[in-house]
Length: 254
Length: 329
Image 1 (cartoon, rainbow over the protein chains, first blue to last red):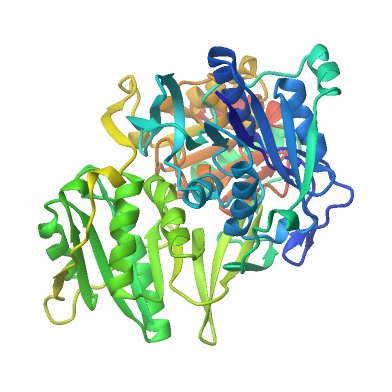
Image 2: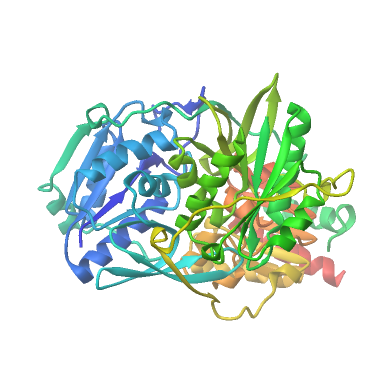
């Protein structure tokens, strides 16, 4: 079973965000694998261990993205594809999906996996759009995958604590829910092995998959506060005493 | 402008976010001199379409088919693309539910259009609509505009609009018009099977008046007893954001947020919770919100009544002690 995992590289969780127009200043901050995508990668590796085949990791963005591809290779992916594009942050969801779908089409994949959403843009559309563009069946927010005889039985998470079983033929595109598995760490052996693995770079232009922007982020900003927060300061002991007083006599909730 | 709202049911009953989105549409319609059309999709749902017709809408569209009895992304996309082709709306609005996430981007793409998902509001800037959504897990907001010709697609986050502001039809009822769609079984590639809930909840957080919730800031499962001691001192239930339950540190039934419980307690004490939107949608209705976090820029402070910027490991025991002292006093 050949699996392509789409992995985005995003600003590190604790990176201070300096806003610059409709994106952030990228200098001086660290980047990391989008956490929701790490669950998709782990699921792909587990499926490969069970059913054989190849795991290909697919990422788009500037040169730095290769670091995230290497991390995926160190965890056990077989090879990587890097769609080089310095203007990646300015793409809309459909634009990103067009490029990813074009790269996927060049491969013979049985399954395409994505994470639930990215921790930066948070569009949460990529997997569904890839399926639409490649005319493949899809399912999202997946908590379990069982493959038998070319079909999948999937556990899909619904809202308010509900789940649903469903069947889906292969090939297909799945968006994986965070928490589906326990993500592995790269071993030293894996890191060494990754050095010999292939990363193919193609430019987004060469994929011929561009289209008109359907939406544009005009600007980003720190949201206006909806509530006036009263900040309590002092030593932990002082803060605790103040807070108990506020909750008791001001908010009257305890 | 013609605004079309795609309403949603949850297991045969109204999903309340459908009404919130209808309110959004009504407000945008007033601001832009537009009309609102509400769409009902399913099988044997005419009675619910009649209910929609009692709201302030110009028209209700009823899309019924045997193959739409149970939701599938293929079935919905095939049917709705035909309905949208016939109705010719300029703007199509959805509630941002798990189901909408599952099919709406595909529906838009089938028509060569884009979707602005998970919006928390909109602004009308001289006739140009600006949609506001969150980025970087709620740390920033973004103003987003549509490019090119419509129909445009957008979804609104749960709680972004108040469903109690839904306006009734001024003179009785809007017409309900059936839209015939062609759909065959071969077009539906996935097969939905049974619905189920995991182990029955032992605790009903929705009924808890006081909730002490922990997030990533708790760092390790060994630290949870500190929060539990605090919850005990305050007389509340312990809850958590998704990552904590994903790790198995607390059972899933204690998870607050879009994939867990939605609560509105008297007091919500958020410990080491950054305030990602997926969590905030589940607790922003709390009457009093206290946030304790080491990061002064954490989005949880946007909605907190009381905030403490500091180390939860120092403040939790101090607060437990202060609460116990207050009790015995």
